[in-house]
Image 1 (tube, rainbow, N blue to C red):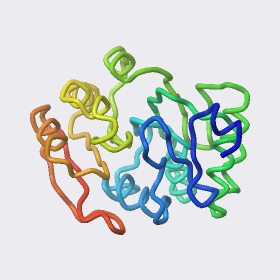
Image 2 (image 1 turned 90 degrees about the vertical axis):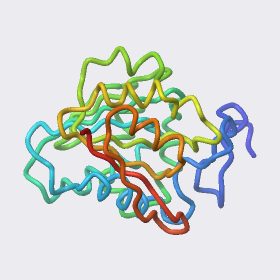
Image 3 (image 1 turned 135 degrees about the vertical axis):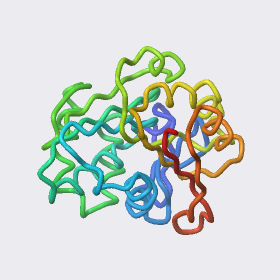
Length: 223
C-alpha cells in the first residue's frame, strides 16, 4: 500500500479495484462491476425502457461514478435528457476515481468529462444528456433535507452487514418519501432486514436473481 492509499483509506484489489478500509468492502464487484451495474441498477429499474424527458435517477453511494457512466453509456442511444442525483459521504479523489475507472476501457471515452468536473470540485455539472448533482455528507442528514423526488433509485451503499447505517429503516423510509409515484428502486442486496424496511416504507418488494455469484438482488415499486 502506498502512503497515498493510507491517507485515503483505500486498498486496491488486483491493483485496480478500490476497497474501502473503513467498511472492508469493494466499491464495485470484483466479478465485472460494469456488468453488475447493468444487471442490478439499470435492468433492475427497467431502464432504458422507462427513460423520458426529465426522468430522475437518485443514488445512495456515488463511489467511483461507475453507475453514472453506465447510465450515460446507455443514454448514448437515447434522445432523452435526464437528471441524476447522488448522495456520497466519503468522496474519492480524482486520482482514485481515475485509477478505478481505468479498469473499464469501454468507459474511457465518456470518463474524461466526469474526471474534469470532479477535478474542478464541481458538485453540479452536465455530463452529456445528464444533469448531475452530487450531494456530499451523511445521508441521514442530507437525504431528509433533499427536496427532490426520484423516478428510480440505485441503492448502492456498502454491504448492509458492514455499513448498517446506510440501510436503516429511517433511511429506507426517507427513500420512499423522495420517490415519485410508481417510482422504483433496485439494489444488489437481498438482506431480509433491508427488504422488510423497504416494504414497511411503502414499496412492493421483489427478490430477483442477482449478478454473478450473488444468488439474489432486490427491486421494488412504490405502491
